[in-house]
Structures are given as C-alpha cells and as structure tokens.
Length: 140
Length: 140
DNA sequence: ATATTAAAAGACCTTTTTGTCTTTTATTAG
DNA sequence: CTAATAAAAGACAAAAAGGTCTTTTAATAT
Image (tube, rainbow over all chains, first blue to last red):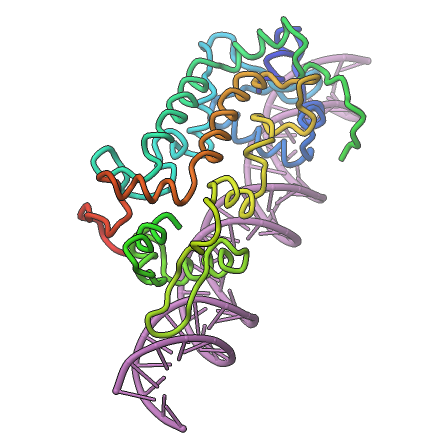
C-alpha cells in the first residue's frame, strides 16, 4: 500500500503485476490480498485499460495499525508477551512489564505512521519502494 | 519453561498435565512441544513415577532468544519490518529506521532475560506461573 | 460494437500449524 | 517381577495460511 501511494503521488496507478514485482511476492497471491484490501475499503481499484490501485485522496491518513488489526486482529496490541490468557496488571506474567514497554512503542509506531506519511518520507529520501533499485536478486 | 524453573526452585518437577493446565494449553499439544524442547536440549525429563521436566542446573542461563531462534528462526531479529527480502541500510524500506529501534529493544529484552532470571524474579514478586491464582476461567 | 486490458470472484491445491490419540519405553514402588 | 506412572514416539486429522489458476465483470480505446 505504501508503494501504491508513492506511485499515486506520481500520478500513477500500479497494477497487480507491478506491485507483486516490487514486493517480490507471487502475482496471484498479491492479487488475492488486494481483493481483500479493496473489499475492506483500504484501497480502491479501477478495472480495465489504465486501471490499477489507488488510495482514496478524500480519506484521511491511514495508520498502519488499522490495517494490521483488520488483517490479523489486535493480539499484537493487547495480547500477553507469553501468550497467556489471563495475564494482566493484577496477574502479570513474568515478562509483563518488560514486554509492555516494547508493546507501547510498537503501538506508538503503528499509530503515528500512516501509509501516507511513509510514502511521503520515502519520496523525500533514498528509500526503497519506488521502482526498486534492484539489488541483483533473482525474480520469482 | 519459566514455570518449570519456578517449580524446580521449589524442588519440584512438574509433568505435562500440570504445565498444560498452568499455561492453559491442551495436554497432548503441550506434550508434543516439550518432546521437541527436550530433543533440542532446552529441558530435561525423567519418565515414570515421580518424573517430570526440569532444567539442567549445570547449564548456564538460557536467554529467551535462544529458544525463539530454535523454534521459529531468527526472522524476528534480523528480518525487515515490512517483510521485504532486500531491505538493508543501503536499500531501506519505509519503516527501516523506526522498526530498527524497536527490534533493538526486542533483541535486548530476549538476550538479557533468561528462563532463570524470569523464574527468580517471579518467585520474588507477585508474578504469575507458580500455581496460578485462577482468575475464574473455564478449563479446556 | 468489439477487442483489449485489468481487477473480482471463486474454485482448487499445498504446506504449515495446531491439535489428538495410541503405542512404546523408561522409571519407580511394592 | 509386577503394577503403576509418566514421558517418547509416531500416526493421524483438522484448521489456517499460503499459493495457483480459470472464469467473470468492468473499463477503455479503436
């Protein structure tokens, strides 16, 4: 999605093939994932010639956290580091406090960073994901 | 394993049933996991009456990181936050730097904390995993 | 209108993870 | 030696994740 937004900022709408290549993922697999993202309203798409994916410019910044929660739930943000079911402040697991600090930072990162903020800062620096400067790897 | 060590410090050797109950995991599933942990040398076991699991007191402190790497590899510790294959300092992904900070902290946590250190500090405070003070949950 | 392009839908298939159960082996108590 | 106990081994099976492919639908350009 960051790649899509980077391209959108250049007035382009990448398609599945281009995105799949960029993230080094299989074409059909990538396609299926974007079907879900479109259905969930995170991206929009246009079929046919000149079609492709794009982020609704009307919508406000989309934090990474929203996407993560929609795809894999909120375990990462509320769950116990040890995976225990009833671990909380009253009944803390051995890692409770230490892991809490890290979780807070993860929370902060994925809340403050958005698809749009990352795309913007990527454009302004030598950051990857805008037609990758290929590091001599084999394609799949 | 922290639970085992806590019990070991009380001169007990918990068995599968006891451990499974403590971590709220299915009996047979827990059993299979410990078969692997024993085979990999992280814990030891004794069969038959009075048997159970224990940590080799001869061995030095076991960092969480060693176990994580043995079970699921080192992706968490070296991989890109976006899962890109060729993301590095020269070709950084949009999240490279920010995620790097968090990864460093995760690394520090799982390197400095060991099964033994967690068991010890759990015994010294009101930390869970030493015959849990059941929070009225259903058993499986 | 028609041909072309590209995503959507959906049917499959493979692999991995998770979970269950039976049989075997080792240990101890009597 | 025998019975009881408890882990090891290994066969299965269900569910989830990962991946592939064909057909359909929508858009565009000629």
